Image (cartoon, rainbow, N blue to C red; front, side):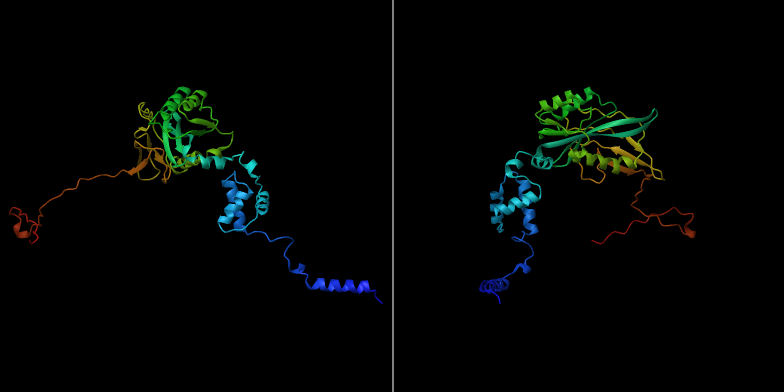
Length: 322
């Protein structure tokens, strides 16, 4: 026989089993928040680096999501985002570029090989690109980018009211030795801070690097450059009047048609959105044999056999009735 305490224990277990819902649970604790709310929390924390847990909770409440501050902290911890006091002291490159996009400009060099009587000659092209508008300006083309040439380019691009960098405050460039100390000093004197990027980090100047790649793939890789024409000097009075060499490139395609590639001068910045993204508004024209067109107001009918000896009579065109 069972003791009374045993019978009461069995009874308590029976009652507890009736109300036990552990088998219907998906997991211990509260259910996790939806993926949409979690992505929204991470986005708020990344775009507003000084927002704490309570501030994010209030912003979510304004959007109709009811989430506690501890849940916000758990989400940020899972995604590796530190709390607000640590986040606002560190600024990653994407956030820095996005915040100062209107004040940032990038610069880079690219080269083109020109076939001359002396062999291949390397031309260096210096470009500047405004990161917000994606507008590109060719500062100059030279065979010898020495320090004197770079100093003159620095004076031109920082000229007050006309320089390419007149609306910029930061200039991104790599660690190429062509960007000399004197060039950076001239840039800094024009209230533009030159920012030297870390070594072997082309992605930090991705806008200029991608434009150079477009020029090489869409333009330079499709032509053979003949002739050595010294580039026209940039006017010392106004850098916006960028004068490119006239007919510096003459190429003959490996087919029956002849191509003449001319570089036309433009008095504005060049847009990188075009398909050919040429550095100087390259246009391709096919050479045709032009024959003059003869326009006549009268028609001469063919002579009949019986009118061979008579002078030819011109028949006027019929007039339209009034």
